[in-house]
Structure formats: structure tokens, C-alpha cells
Amino acid sequence: MDYINIIILALFVNNVVLAQFLGICPFLGVSNKIPTALGMGAAVVFVMALANLATYFVYSYVLVPLQIEFMQTISFILVIAALVQMVEIILKKMSPPLYQALGIYLPLITTNCAVLGIALLAITKEYDLIHSVIYASMTAIGFTLAMVIMAGIREQLQLVTIPKGMRGVPIVLVTAGLLAMAFMGFSGMVK
Image: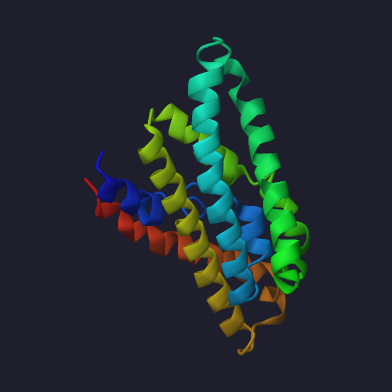
């Protein structure tokens, strides 16, 4: 599979949030404002790319030679948790307002099933190192794209009158569903 197909598939066709439904918690929780969504997206891009890089090496050079591939999930979780802690420390030092805005959702990247899911999928698809990192990076950018679009829509929804029964979570879920259906239109782009 060439790089262009991986990029299109990861960004649009198999968008991790809107097609695979991974990472829904931060998608719904942090998509209130565009700057917060961008900050969370940048953190996920960083963690997901580094996680795939690290998990590729752990899998290829530790688990496979020792014939303990069954330990991949546990070892991948440990790698991801360490990376998220590193991101949290960096953000707290470099950008305290963003750190405060992300709140509890930043440590939740550790349990974000999208990060673990993409690391496991890259191994399952037998991607080499470069394909794995590109796949993870594009998937994370697709996650960011979905969050920023959702944040923009949610900012616009604050400016209109919404029926009482649809305010809050109901309108957000309906909007997310419509956004997912819109992204389904990209499925005809790749053969």
C-alpha cells in the first residue's frame, strides 16, 4: 500500500473517531472550543506517532525474539502511559493555559483506545517502521481534524436557539452522527 492510500484512508475513509469510533471520550469532551481541540489534537499526534515508533521496536526487537507476542497489549499500554506522562510534564511547563484547558482529558490519552488501537492495528497490518509511523501520524491528524470540525460546529451551535430537549449532550451526539455520515462519503475515494 503506498503512502497516499495510507494518508487518505487514515484521514478520511477510516477516520479513527468518525468511522472506527475510537477515541470518542476526548472527542466529545474536549471539542467545545477550537483552540482546546487543536491542543488536544497536537498532544495526540505527538503521543500516537511516538507510541507507534516505540511499540514497533518493542514488538519487533523484544516481544518477537522472546516469543512473547501475547504480551503486546500490556507492553504497549506501558509505553503509551510513559509517553503521556512525558507530554503532560512538557505541557505543564511550556503551556500552563493549555494544560489547564485540557484538564482530566490529557491523562486520559493513556486510556484513549485510539492510541492503543492504532498501535495494535499497525502490527496487525504488518506495516514496516515508516508505514507504521505515517499511519499513526495521519490517523492522529484525522482525529484532530474531526475534533476541530466538531469544535467549530459546537461553537456555532452556541449562537443559535436549540429546542430545550436537544440542548447539551443530545445535540452533540446528533451532530457527531451527522459528521460521521458525512465522512462516510469519502469511502469511495480509495479502491
